[in-house]
Image 1 (spheres, rainbow, N blue to C red):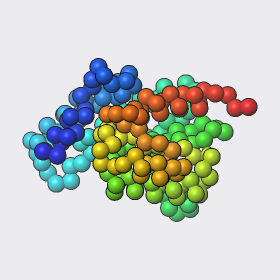
Image 2: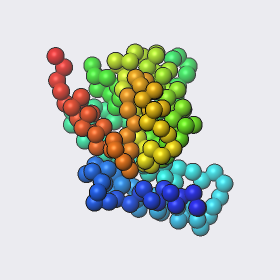
Image 3: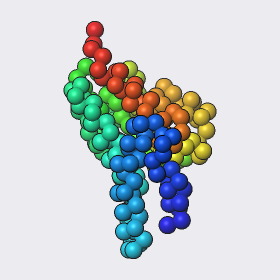
Length: 186
């Protein structure tokens, strides 16, 4: 359970958090604590997703307001890279004639998890074309395990990385998606 101490430091909503960040943290906090307590009372092998799954669910629920623009919000969707090769994307946003937005949610972002998301972004954008796909990573933790230089190097395959603990906050992504999906095509 000691590994969750760092998680706990970034989970509680704060008055310093931007509005959407605070809303996501509020929506997941109790579920995360409940899962941790269940694990603490029965630490069986194979119990996972104690922080990650509620985080993914909270972000997906926060994105549901995009449905008013005709955006389909799909959690944990298998996304085909090429025929016969797929990957699971934590959230897929689709709207006819608009770019598809893929969101990879990470509790914390280290070099291994960043490489995994970057690999998905690279192969998907190579297959579908860079203009047709937006690929974002959202993490609970601040960027203390990955350098900003890595993130910049991964562009244009990873469009941006957002956090619920420091700038750029997920609120900036939500504003970008609002503008993209509500703006009529010309």
